[in-house]
Length: 148
Image 1 (cartoon, rainbow, N blue to C red):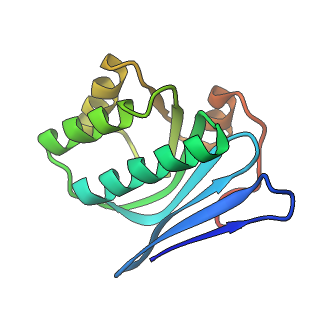
Image 2: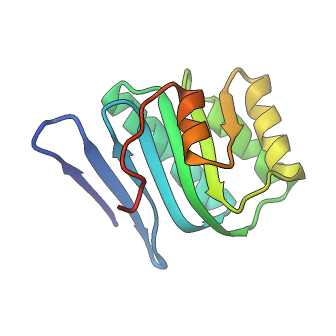
C-alpha cells in the first residue's frame, strides 16, 4: 500500500512504498532533490522496477532531475540480466542524475555493469561512500539525513 503526504509549504512531499514485508523505501522531495531512503532494502528485479517507476513519477511531479538514494542493502538478488534490465529502465527516466550512497556498500561487478548500461544510454549515476560526497556531486545543499 502506498502512502503520500504534502507539507504546508506545498513543496516538500513524501511517498512511502509498503509491501508485505514493510516499507522498502520512502521518497521525499526536499525542494532541491528527491531523496530515496531504503532501509534494509532487498535489491531484486521487482524492487528495482517499482523503485524506478516511483522515482520517475516523483521526478515528473516535482520537475526534479536530481536524486539521492541512501540506505542499507540487506540482500541483492540480481543476476547479470537483471542488472542489464534495471540499467535500461533507469536510463529511460530521461535527464535524471542519481547519486547512490548505501552504507557499507562496495560496488561490485554487477553494480558496475548496471552503471555502465545506464551510462551507455545517456544516464548519469555514481556510487558514493559518504552522504556529503553524494550531495556535492549532485550540486545540492544538505537536507536532514533520511530517516530523521
